[in-house]
Amino acid sequence: MAHFARINALGIVSTVIVAEQDFIDTLDNADSWVQTSYNTRGGVHYNPETGEPDNGEALRKNFAGIGFKYDIDRDAFIPPQPFASWTLNETTCLWDCPIDPPTPTEEEAAAGQYYIWDEATYQADNTQGWVLVGGGAE
Image (cartoon, rainbow, N blue to C red; front, side, top):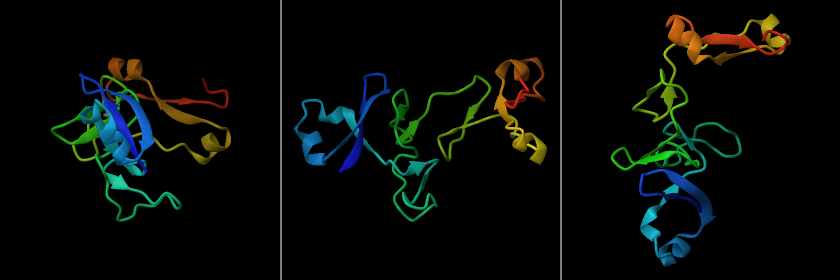
């Protein structure tokens, strides 16, 4: 069994299923299905039991999800761009934010606080963008 993504005319994933290749081959639209690897993320294959990188085949950069784009030139599944300021990482085919996220302090983490990206904050001042939330910080 393998995972397959159905790609529409715009190159967007509309469905992801588990099936045998023989079944896919019987479909009238077999050419619109592309195999995807459940254990692949950012061009790295991960062991499903340990979550650690292994030597498995990193098929098509990322496991396909509904709404992902299949880029035939890169032979990669690319998730939707989360924010206008984020850029595509050509190596991983994932989106990079323009500013590295801060690490919560021990006190922030203990209080249940964490950082989220705020595009409006970034657009107002492109040296900012991560906002502390949770634990009553909002």
